[in-house]
Image 1: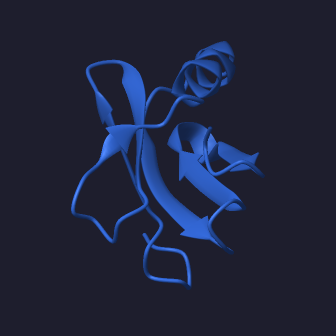
Image 2 (image 1 turned 90 degrees about the vertical axis):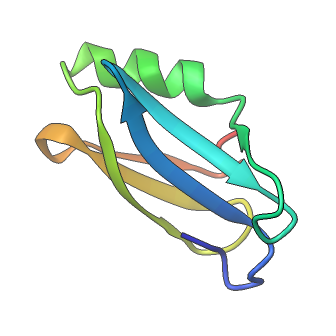
Length: 80
């Protein structure tokens, strides 16, 4: 999913039993794992949730992601 600027994008998913949050700041030409992924994984583990399925970006920094068991997480730093 992309922010309205169409330059900042995010991809969610999972690998094994670990959530995956990736981001791009060049319209998808390159992608990297978001640095905030480790704290997201810790929060999700405490709820026994490991998979991310969806997300929404209000802008380049305000995102919400959703996953297993109805879990929803917000970031005001674009996942960083």
